[in-house]
Amino acid sequence: MSGSSVGGSFAVADYVVFAVMLLVSAAVGVYFAWTDRKQRSAGDFLTGGRRLTALPVSMSLSASFMSAITVLGNPAEVYRYGASIAFYAVSYVFTMLITSEVFLPVFYKLSITSTYEYLELRFNRATRLMGTMLFIVQTILYTGIVIYAPALALNQVTGLDLWGAVISTGVVCTFYCTMLGVMLAGFLTVIIRSVVLQGGVINIISDSQQGGRLNLLDFDPNPLRRHTFWTLSIGGAFIWLSIYGINQAQVQRYIACKSMTQARLSLFINLLGLWSILLSSVFAGMCLFSVYKSCDPWTTGLISAPDQLMPYLVMDILGGYPGLPGLFVAGTYSGSLSTVSSSINALAAVTVEDIIRPYTNFSEKRLTWISKGMSFFYGILCIGMAGLASFMGGILQAAISIFGIIGGPLLGLFTLGILCPLANSKGALSGLFSGMALSLWVGIGAQIYPPSNALSQPLPLSTEGCNFTTAHGSNWTSSTLPIQNFTSVAPVHHGDKWVLTDLYSLSYLYFSPLGTITAITVGLVVSILTGGWNLKVEPSLILKKEDTTIYHFIKTFTGRIKRRSGHLDLKKDREMTFGNANPAFSDFELDLAKSGLS
Image 1 (cartoon, rainbow, N blue to C red):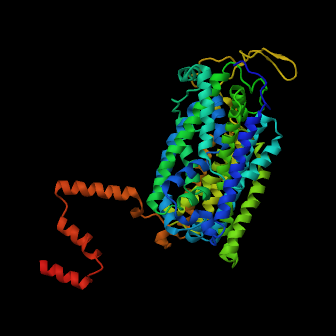
Image 2: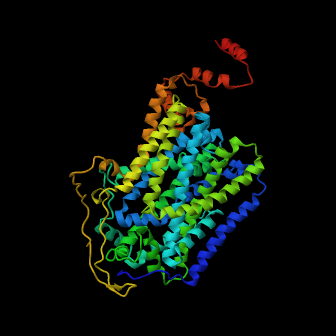
Image 3: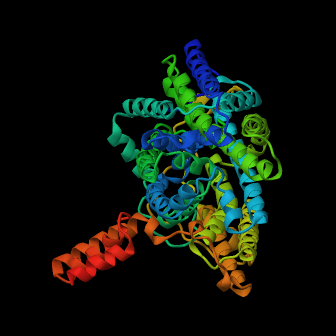
């Protein structure tokens, strides 16, 4: 398309669709708040009474962190940097495997409401409070971005004042909603219309290939490169582990299942949802490039930020179909509603369980009301934090950077406690502070001294096909940045540079591994130096091999091999495995039985 000044053209039907979605979202929250008003336990309010099955929990897991950041940020990322973010799919697999085998067994058996309760049980109260405060800061910052993102979309397609959109998003999100289907419907609507306009899927793939967007074979191990297979799969795994493994918003979902098997199953069913949304968003980004390959709306000033590309495309190709732009914006909002509601609920949970309950003697009924009040308070606070998000650049990178800088050291802290029996409280706090200091230093340095284009490798954008009149009355016909074949990797030139340039140029996806590894390493060293070898830890606070499915799989597999090879003594195995397990007989009676057999 040649491009045109599109914006502020919502039709009546679009407003109706969008308004109905907001009303339904708010109504769902009010309905469940009313039907569950007799819950007397704050834990029941925050975890659903631990009576859920795998399917609804998996849908909630998928929707809760697949927010407007995904709807707007992923397609813009593909448009600007290519489809390599599809490798997040690999990181999702690693994340679910490690979460189900390492973190889930410990948290589920402890039956705790706040994951940060674990830190006090394993280390001390100071460690718990530090972890809680870092989580609160991280979640408020992230939720501010999630609220800001759909406000950008609404501002682009309706002309509504940006801060009016921010406030409306935050208010409705505070009530609660999880509408994964609406998000996917919005994606599919844009994709189907783009495919029809561009003459088929093959044409879109061809345009993306010619424009260098199908950069899926980049296996460069250089940690300074922004996106490669390794940064996305390994760095992404650490980031998603800090979310699914220890983040309160996700943990309180899967520990709400009625059994550990159901909880594990919910994680793997959730994979299907994550893959579906990721692939939909990647292909939506390819559609974006195919439509605007000859006339980039960002370069021409038709939009103010790349994150407005998807809303602009919606109004450009769906503006003539009343109701469909409203459906897309509804999908954007539904993503934010699910994310913000889970984040606010998690903030309320950790505040009540980690800060209020230990220092008060309030009844469960009063704590439940306090939880609801804290949800409202954090909703208002997150609306205010959305202002900071407007200064953080691209919403996808900003969100991941926050989880890397703060979530990485927290992941290291929990890993230290669960996998390292000799880790003590001194080592835990030392590791947390060290990991946080290093990741924060690198993260802030990357904002002040951003990596060069040779490392981030933004792909070129073209305006050679533009021919339209701007809002100021000038005719845009210029041609800049023509598209070429970009299959080769640009060389990195090394000249005179500051000694910390490479450190600050580290891929933002490696902020989390940096913080995690630093926290574990420093924590172990300090623990050993301060008497960690003599520490006695409650067995339920560390991972036991019997809690993992891998252990039982290996045990079953090796047992079959022994039976087939004839090396397994079945009589001895029965006596040891089954004889003493029957509580109907005493040890004395069993000894008599064995002596009689001999």
